[in-house]
Length: 62
Length: 440
Image 1: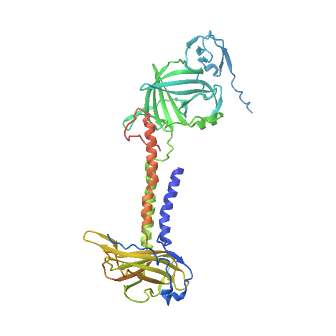
Image 2: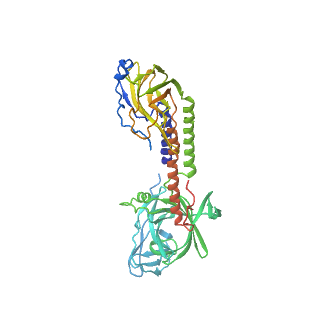
Image 3: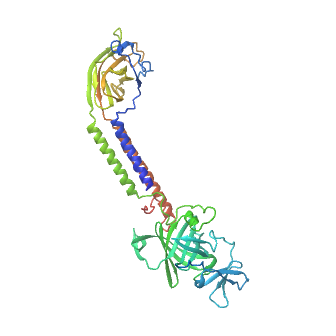
């Protein structure tokens, strides 16, 4: 019985985890969160330095 | 107030063969007693204490529960007064188990059996079970419980100690049939002109050690015993009914997510970029509003790229608070006559974006001096940027669907494996997967 109770808890955690993932709008995408980006960026977008600006690229092709 | 009953008196007699003392605890019930010094079985009812058998033993077997030990079973005190070893021979191999005779002057006799760390608490049956059939096999029914036939064997007595309320001889043989409904076992013993039935209940060594307050620890149980309750609780049906219930719950949550996620488009426009255009390439979109509770924001890039790539540095920026999510996406698409690689579109989801006014900073890049043989497409790209909020994500539900049955499958496999091991010791042992029924 204990094992089945643990199983129910496990299943509920999976199901509700999937629901919570959606409800809270979570994402696995890799990104950098910043605070206090100056408002001047809107007028001068070139002044912003992207965290991802110099990543090595894959140029594709076979 | 009734006086507390005094413990039964121990009577002793002298062995007519060797003169050794023989203690009697079974009062007037004792018919045979064994002299442990000379291994003589004595008829205690005869006036001359007639020796009915003298037997030889390769070794003196010491019972795990010494004769005279008192313990409590089912709330009643019992004393160990007899001990015997019984043996069956299967395919030329001897298998022996121990039987302890317990006595309470008010409750009568009961037995304990011991084999490879497994114990049974046995009492003689006062009725007669009904012979029946279960799954095409022999079975008996007793008090509305069906006991499946487990095995038939000829058991012979190979060693005795203590005293017995019946005639006992080393070499006595009886046809034994065991029927099981774990944790119970019904056994019939047939000797010419007599069939006796007994009901055993499986006990662990710890149960017996506690009941008789024995020192040390009991021998560990080896293998699965005939009427041992499966440690893997629950039947396959129970496990799978839980899995189906959890699947249903997951499906309901998936449908609710699909129905109640707004998937609202909050921005969409088309841009063109050329690497040859001089000057600053980064720009910002018009401001758009993200409403409602914190939710994901999906940015979808759709391009007309072919045989080329483009990289987009992007930042979703809250105009009011300065909070930003910075990320980059590469889009590339190449194809040949019989192959293709990459995709001309891509999406990214920004997590838990609170309500507010936002804009997107985009900085596209392309290779202005391509050296790769395949990068032959035009040096410009037209691309759409579509932004949605509260977009449902289905893969967590897919993972939940896949993982939910895993413990149930493992539990059922382990339960079947246990039953298989149990029935391998029976007359119905198989070499394939027929492992008998699951316990409830």
